[in-house]
Picture 1 (cartoon, rainbow, N blue to C red):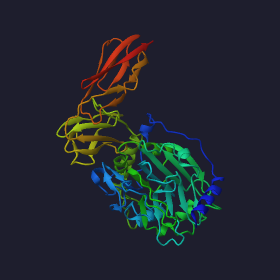
Picture 2: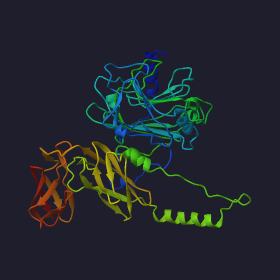
Picture 3: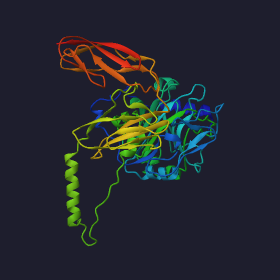
Length: 493
């Protein structure tokens, strides 16, 4: 099939698509209660410390083919001089056949692929696939599943089905060469005749479409591809890759930057998709995994034994009392990073993670890389060597996890610039407002301090949270290193 025919087919299919207006899920208190699935995480890569190991449930290590490298904790596939074709430069993901089998047999009938991605000017084409699952035994040369830079999720059984076919800028305005963005493709086989495809950028729904199918068991449907119909393409999948171009059409490799790659065997909800934009999401997703066990039974009597029944009952009671996920907040006093969930510390220096949990319960701390940063049971983090590590804070009941990134630098970095998001805050008496940093020196280790000149009007804590007391005006001095700025707080009744 020629490229021109592929585009013509895409344009024809586009007329049948149903679009949803872009919606977003705000990261508010309700989102804090959302958790990622406790099973079905097949791929999980954060590339921390140059690692290609899969943290998902399917074991194995990825491999870089051709050009590309792990740089500063992400996969850089844009290092070669020219756009490559026929899968010259890409990352091969492990045990693709096992992953495909899991998807094929999963009762969830869906799939969620997500990655943080940054485009590199002149290093990609609209048709370059970001993620591909394929079968070398597929006679037509079509990929079984592909998410392309043009923003589509493409499923193939007896045809080619697209989530969207307009230009990339219109569909995925959030993808650019200026910043990282989280691209998430969700396929839900339980919706419509043949399923639905959703494309998100940073948690915002950009497009959605029905997959054409004459019935839910038709080969031209997600359910058909996943094994409900007669199609066997997915069962023969033996290749999964990041950035590998299409050998059949010579589509160029997607030479882009990748980080935090996840693949689930289910369709995540919009609220769960919103969580994927968070820092340290891979460790959060891995921490959410649980191992379910089935009580043993008598061979002659399927009823669980008394002791086992009691254990099961207690477990149920525990679940009932902790049904609501806890709200966990992690802060660092004096943190000078403009990102609230990232802190910089010098080698051999320490920083304390201040954690509050509602309702109150104990938490545990784990580090993604002990060679970079360690953490004690009290949340005291120590820099070991230059690099980045993710500290995961988990509640005792295992229902809530929060990831906090620690950036370790070799030596102290002095701050030379300080800007705040707002120099004037208007707050009603009895309410609070947060002073937010807009700019500081990159990787500075200097601490930020806050001081009010009128405690009776407004106070400020060590995290920059202002509490309005009574009508009047207060000046808050924000200082980092030798730089300072004043924030005016106007308190009304």
